[in-house]
Amino acid sequence: MISVILIEPKLSANIGAIARVMKNFNFTNLVLINPKCNHLSQMARNRAKHANDILTKTKIKKKSYLNQFDYLIATTAVLGSDYNIPRCPITPRQLGDKLAKIDPKKKIGLLIGRESSGLTNEEIQKSDFVVSVPTSKRYSTLNISHAVAIILYEIFQSSGELKINDHIVSASKKEKDIILKKVGNILNRLDFSTEEKKQTQKKVWKRIIGKSLLTKREAFALLGFLRKLEK
Image (tube, rainbow, N blue to C red; front, side, top):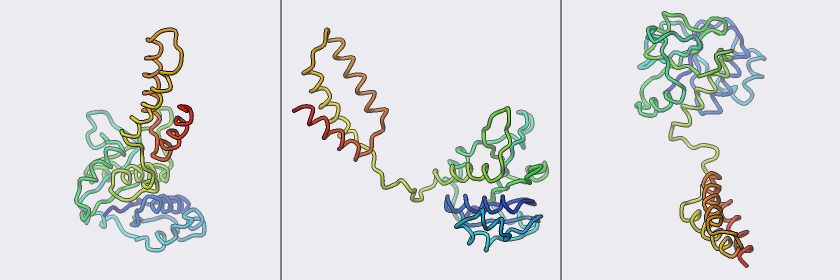
């Protein structure tokens, strides 16, 4: 079970926005450690949209609450050198892969720092490891709600939970082979100045079909079109 834990948040709008992205990716446990604002304010509710249920059951706790977690994951935009071991991060994608292998019954806390200063060295040291979103060196700091959205997205993608696009089926190798056979039949009936140019066309079409990542429905539509061309 993963809890999103905000450390001393100051802006209710950020809390509402985080509740919203949590619901987008099927996370429900929000914890506020010593909040400096009202998480049930109208601003927070407006930002949460249809995630007001998450705001309503948000837990308000003190720092000692962190001691109950099996794993604590810190987030930071302030990285150290290779010698600064506590601030050597993994990426959100690597985090998703790691969490997918952990017993779902374990209590995991994702620590999100203060809007102005992030997490302290002491809070990061308390964590098991650190995750950071790879951003541009020119401006590395994200709004906390944006950072949470990216991290939760990667965790969700690595999970076995149903996604909004799971009903879309990709074309199989068999379907792609049939398409390429149809293309080959059509090309064989066309005039080329050399056999080499004809073979080049076949290679190009094989690459085009492969890179297209066709869905099954798109493959059927393309086959119908190619059948008409054959006639």
